[in-house]
Image 1 (cartoon, protein in one colour):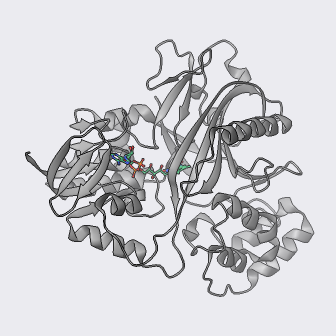
Image 2 (cartoon, rainbow, N blue to C red):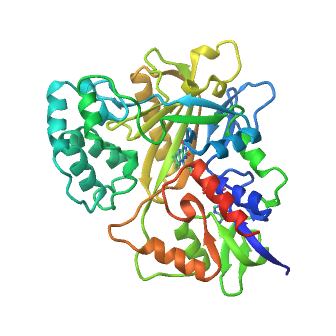
Image 3 (spheres, protein in one colour):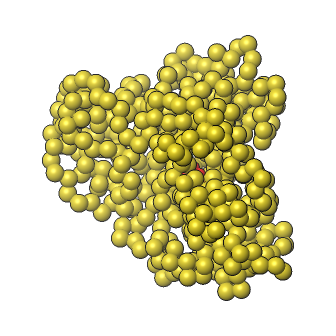
Length: 432
Ligand SMILES: Cc1cc2nc3c(=O)[nH]c(=O)nc-3n(C[C@H](O)[C@H](O)[C@H](O)COP(=O)(O)OP(=O)(O)OC[C@H]3O[C@@H](n4cnc5c(N)ncnc54)[C@H](O)[C@@H]3O)c2cc1C
């Protein structure tokens, strides 16, 4: 068996970028590249899934992981991607939507207190003005930074859903996603404030995320449908589900950190940090009379349990089938979190799908549904227990076996597509 000097595991955006920068071979479990950053197409008449768009433009474009927008990013990286697959630029339109009252408050809620009325705004401001004590858990951190009023109204119920109930057991994380700026909060209690946060502007490939991914992997040596089922880190051998194997000197792995430890048969004394899974529902429907023009909405109180609904077609009409009634259609993605790996059985998913459609119709967001597709993201959000050293220990243990973890799931960090691509490019270049 020949030995591969450096093998990349996974051809999501991180692995694909690493393979490209290092001219390295890669193996991928799926039949297509892109991992969760991948568009697919659904025929309106048959609901059949297609990997590439049909030439007559008659299909709905959806994404495996729900709306995947390219946030931020250095100009040089964006220019390079733009040459691979032309990008279009957008200004974020996001809001918090209270399902029970129909009230919509621009995102982030803490900078738009005027929309919540004088009494709530005053209470929230007084609470936010107090110094925030250190906090051990995400729930305590949110309460300390935004005060009980906003916590009870939005931060608590929203994060309860977003973390699938973990919020008072996990460490605070990614504070930049909930920016706290008292001066802006004060301005927002009386009038408009400028948009803030990491995703104020974003880009998206003109021909779909799949076009970008295809360009990223063009001419690469990727073995698709090669699921890794075991790794012998001493003999440095990777075994595949179909029975083959290959030897390596080094691995660049974008597979989830906890999964890599178990594939290698390596154990740590401390418990693994948790993750949450997400079920994405992609819906193509008639446009409802009250569909807002937002790109996405954070929902703390949906009856069916989802925490976010996005409207692909509000970003770009090209997500819709090209046909005469196009302007009466809408395409949406709806995300609900589950405790890591606890995928609901098919009947429960079917019940949930129906509940979501009923709810979106009752809000006036959609009319009759034409297509609906469900995608399960097993490792979607990674978290850590307070004080945990598991991540560092796991990365170190694998490194000692010449296995280098890369990417959002490989390194167990929150990061977007552009950071993942950048990281893959750097890792791949360093192997040359
Ligand atoms: C719900 C959700 C919404 C998001 N929205 C955005 C957004 O709008 N903008 C943004 O910038 N980021 C977003 N992200 C983050 C973005 O998805 C990640 O940064 C990015 O997908 C990470 O890519 P990756 O290649 O590291 O991982 P992955 O996409 O998970 O790729 C890993 C690859 O490894 C393969 N693999 C797994 N196991 C094996 C095995 N045993 N053998 C072989 N291959 C295997 C998988 O099939 C996959 O192709 C979102 C994430 C989630 C969960």
